Image 1 (cartoon, rainbow, N blue to C red):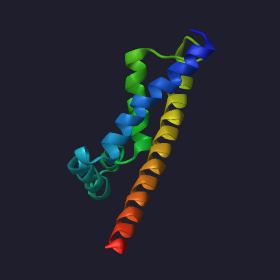
Image 2 (image 1 turned 180 degrees about the horizontal axis):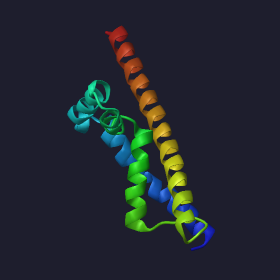
Image 3 (image 1 turned 120 degrees about the vertical axis):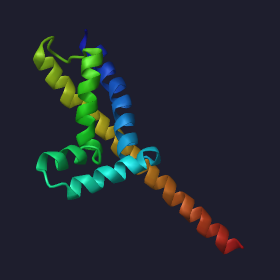
Length: 126
């Protein structure tokens, strides 16, 4: 696969990685699960159990595991066609997916701020 096609694959595969990682760790659909994981990550007596549950509360941490699943499903490799290609593509996907999540977080914050500003202006008009 040419390097240009690998770059396209990188940016495309990072989208579902980011979407899944963000949804599981932040969205309301998984709120109860997320709250349970936060509680277990803080109160469990066992370090491995605390770390296991923490993984579901951190989009950066969770994205590593989602990337591994995507690499197994797609067989995507960058630069090398052996194990080195999996390692390079894995860390590259995590990096791009986390850039996507950062951009999304900033957009959400800006949108929320605009909504609050609009509500404040509407209250001032009435």
